[in-house]
Length: 115
Image (cartoon, rainbow, N blue to C red; front, side, top):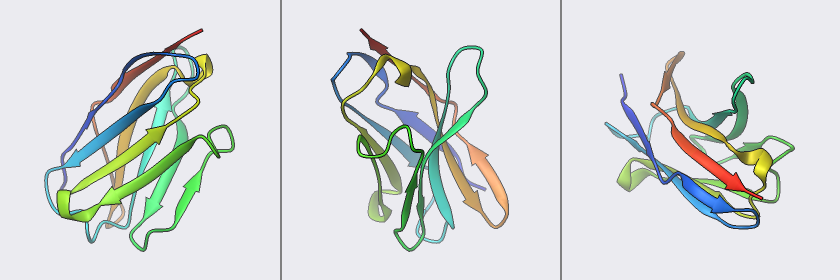
């Protein structure tokens, strides 16, 4: 089992940047994949970015070139660097871990981008 705690959300103007952090309760070295999802009001949760154990990454088309996911195994933390933010990026952002076939979720952090 792994506990995930997100931080770094907030209010930012369009064009600005934020860095989200996801701290895990145990080593993430062996976790198959970790990622970020988001859910805007009255919309379904959607995939944002993923980083696999080997370091390969995958992004939703809507964030490619603007967001970067990374992991620091020594700190048991995954990051999401978000640049050139747009009002459409406003959502609650959730960290996710896929470990031995089980998905774990954090409680989410709110990101609000004003126009």
